Image (cartoon, rainbow, N blue to C red):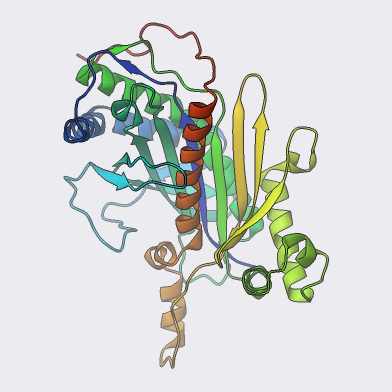
Length: 368
């Protein structure tokens, strides 16, 4: 059983920041957002990633900076590109375009038990607070893990993947507030805003892992092409391989979120995304917080085929970090789910506004 790439996306939602003077037209707020991203990249990002790394060490992992020159991207970017801004087209019922700022990723060496990972970490923020007076900024931290040894036949298993997710969840918890502080400080330097930038209680956590086993492929095919439900596959109505694949998903999800079986406060909904993966989704609402958890398995889109004169070399190539990231289903699906959940939050809070929290007048002092 092989879990080649594991990804943990964690997103937090902020209360609206009331900008007294407004920011004008689309061109003006996009320009302002770009300048804010560069401001944060130069003043705050190093300390942010340092705090994330320290959190890993606190939970018993060994965290080190990756060797100089290590590049996990197939397309290399110039070092001067400390941050970039992406336009996200309208999603679902939302007719509004959105802009997301991404900081240049950092790659670390993470040692968990006997498994060594390359962990690619990226922080990102949305421009919602500049687009609308009621806009709620989204803050995200993404952790992508791939095994360091591409030549080893001992590939990551379920336990390795779950350990990675638990460790990076602790890292995300340590990084969200510093990311909020950096955003608030940059907003303070760029505009005049009324009130503080406070986090809404609760997190969105998307935990997916690429799985290349034949049984999981059988499950995805049964659900995608034959219209078999997850429950039917688990019960063996789509054959033994698909049933085994459904059991793999169930086991993984139960270890990622042990409280999933407690239906007193969680509802479980099985879903599929075309022929990419199978996942479970929960929402936990209390008077104090709103958490969303999505967890499951995905399959990659490996493109190797035809006659191979050097099978050993091709096998190693298929397990190189850059290749695993390029063909990953988990990366594609988790990004799509994060965008959909962000749009859903906006839709829900716009339709039924929640009472705003009482916050200090200013949460972060402007940097000198």
